Length: 314
Image (cartoon, rainbow, N blue to C red):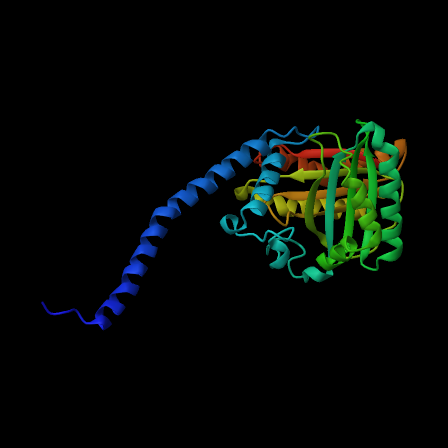
């Protein structure tokens, strides 16, 4: 019998190995997908079971579930696992008032909410007020740092912060006073299920410094349906223009779209006047531009109910 040339065997072995590897991929890929789906399903159930903050709508819960999942599964959701939001790297939606402004010139805004355990209240206030003071004094790109407590729930706190672009916030995170405050937060001083929720958005305005003053404040989350977006945006633009130009008791009205969840919008408003500033908010609700907003809101334009949080600065 004639022997098969060695050179032919050497050529066939790599082909056989390639076929084996291909078969392994075909067998293991479905298993990996099932495992990933199982992890996602389990995480979704865990997040859905979290207690909600008072006034927090199901839409707000769903939005934060989407954000958390995107951080755990960046390849599946197409987001970076190491950045707060995808749209911070992209042009803003063309229908927003700030679309033509480079993001590095826009106010990079955060709305934060959480509840502190009663025995941690004084330690928290010392830590957060030190962070606020040093942030505004030592950081050139820090524009605003508001700290407030709920008007209806003791030890439920809210923050609103603004920086010059995302780089300004990164500089804040690298500061020594932030490290001190973070060290306190790492001691887990929060009520279970009421750990910090952070909403990030680019404001509708260019970056400018604001002074902290006593005020009646709102942080709001709105979830317009995609098909209602074209009417939602100009309605909000009109409401803001009226608040800014026609309401002497309105100190601030800023808004923007979430950097992580499309069609999720975040707001921060401040009012002054009698009753700790509530007079200004009540005047806002009687204005014609607010009536136009209520007319739009009555058309059921949302995927879930608005989430509104009232607080006063401290």
